[in-house]
Length: 298
Image (cartoon, rainbow, N blue to C red; front, side, top):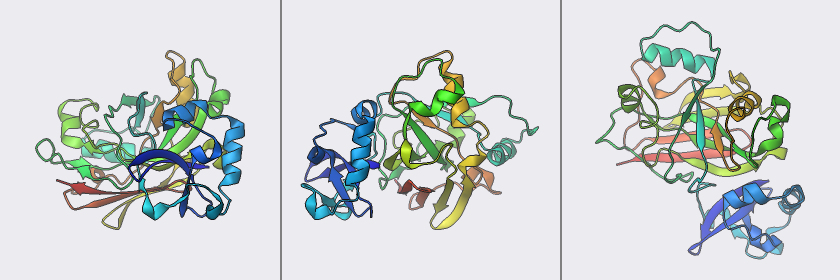
């Protein structure tokens, strides 16, 4: 099941993509009246997910309210996250190396502990929305393709073996970053939380659709140039570890979004760095989920 948030004729709806991903079917036509994605994530039963999986193969002309994907506006799956957005820093070894080079720091090749930080998201950007350049604040605008995990129920003191049972699904995010702010303040909250710095989507793929742990190709391109090209099996700290470790001392609430980190090839990793500028188009793609295509705007 690929579930989306979309606008059609001035109304915001939840829907699923059909098997060919050319049509969107509104959940309401299946008797599901979830008001928003977070309500669906926390309330949807396994039987409802199975029903939607089956309905995705139905002829669109048999679905009341079905609309061609080209005729609707896809929004971020969770437009205004009410729960935490937790991110992992330098969670691919090659990105850890390029990050250390950029900061002119020694890198031992050892990562005994995960690096966590919070990203404030006032409003998530849709898969085709613009990324504001914020040129009054930053000259070092960067991109990061990442797999994000969405939790379906509260997690507290969860074992690694149980972690997968807490996952509703997966999506693509671009962890847009202002590197100069990030380094100036010696923390990541400000430089990663400016408005428009959380493109997300184009859908959430339910956990049953992807083998676990996910081994998915992920790539980014800027103006068609391949920048990042890796696989989620190269995560230093995997999903099991992250959910287990964080939940030992705090409750991860249903609806929490966990962004699993980015591979090598971010703009800071080049010599000289390749930071974004207005007019650039950033594409972030993850196998089996989809692609974000966001232009940088003034």
